[in-house]
Amino acid sequence: MAEQRTLEAPVAATEPPYSLRRDVSFSALLAGLVAVVVCYSGPLVVVLAAARAGRLDEAHTASWIWAVSIGSGLISLLLSWYTRIPVIAAWSTPGAALLVSSLGSYPYPAAIGAYLVSGVAVTVLGATGLFGRLIRAIPAGVVNAMLAGILFSFGTEIFSSLHTAPAVVLAALAAYLTAKRLLPRYAVPAALLVGSVAAALTTGLPLHVGHGGLVRPVLTAPSFDGAALVGLALPLTLVALASQNAPGLGVLRAFGYQPDDRLLVGATGVVSVLLAPFGGPGVNIAAITAAICTSPESHPQPRRRYVAGMSIGVLYLLVGCFGGVLVALFAGLPAALVAVVGGVALIGAFQGSLAAALAEESGREAAAVTFLATASGMTLGGIGAAFWGLLLGVATHLVLTLRRPASVG
Image 1: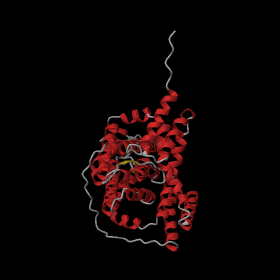
Image 2 (image 1 turned 90 degrees about the vertical axis):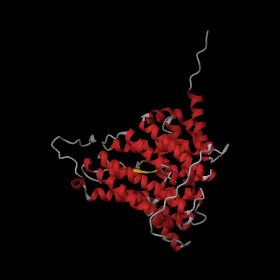
Image 3 (image 1 turned 60 degrees about the vertical axis):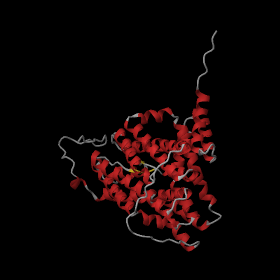
Image 4 (image 1 turned 45 degrees about the vertical axis):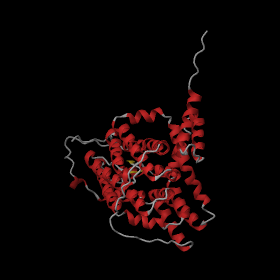
C-alpha cells in the first residue's frame, strides 16, 4: 500500500511506520466527536425539512438518515485508514436544501431513480478524472449562484418565522451569533440548544424518544422519470461536485495533504449508488467538518490526524444504526425552530456561494440571472428552478462572452 505524504510534515525515512495503536490520541478522537455533533445538529434539521417536504413517513426518513450515515461512516473509516489522511465524508446540506424545494414535486421512486443516476454520474466523473474538466467547463459563478439561489429561502425563513414564535427565533439567533464570536465551532449546536429551551418555555416542545432499536432500512425500487432526472439528478450532481467535493478536497490540500481525487470522489459515488435505493441522495467529501479533523487541534502531527477521520467514521456508523431515535426527537421540533436552526446552519454556505458567484465582475450578469431564476422557485414542465437557473445562467454567459464572427470583406 502506497502511503500518502503531507506537504506540511513529510514522513522521514527514519520515522517508524504507521501504527494505529500508537497513532491514536485523545485529541483526534475528540475532534471526530465534535465533527459528528456539528453534522447532526443543524444539517440534520435541513434533512428532516426535506423529508417533510417530500411527505416521507418516519420509516422512510429514518432509512434516509441511515443511508447517509452508513455511507459517510464507511467512507470516513475505511479511506482514512487506507490513505492515512483524515478523509471526512458527509451528506450534502445544500443538496438537502435543494430537496426541500424539489422533492415534493416528484414521486418518491422517481426521486430514488434520480439519486441513483446522480451517484453513477459522480462515480464516472470522479473515477475517470472528468471531474475537474466538468467543473472548469461550467462557469464557477453560475454554479455558485445556483447554490446561493437554493439556499436563499432558508435565510429568509429565519426572519419570516418571527411573527409565529419571536422568542424562539430571537433566542436561537442570539445564541448563534454569540457562539459564532466566542466558539465558532459550536455556533449551530448552541442555536439548537437555546432555541429548544426557548420553545419549551413558550410554545412547547412535544418531543418523544421513540423506539431505541436498530433502524430497518426501507428498500425502494427506483423509477426513471425524465423530469426528475433533469430537475433532481443534474442539480444534485453539480452541487455534490462543485459545492461539496471540490471544497472538501481543497480543505485537505490547504492543510498540506495530497488526496487522490479519483479515489476519493469515485468512492463517494460508488457508495452513493449502493445506498440510493434506501433513500440516500448521496454522500460526498466534507469541507466544514473536514476542517475540524484536519486542523492542528486534531493532533499537532499531521500524519496522525487520520485517526480523527476513523473516529468520526465509527460514530457515523453508530448514530446511523440508531437513527430512528434522532428522527423521533427532531420530529417534535416546532416549525419556527427548524426554520431558524436550518437557516443559521446554511448562512456560511450561502455567503460563501454568493461571494464566489459575484467574485468576477465579467460573470456577474450571468450569476445574477442564475440566482434570481433559482431563488424564484419556479417550475416549468415539471422541472424545478435549480435546473432552469443553471440553464439560463449558462445561456446568459454564452450570449455575453461568445465572440462575434469576424466580418468578411
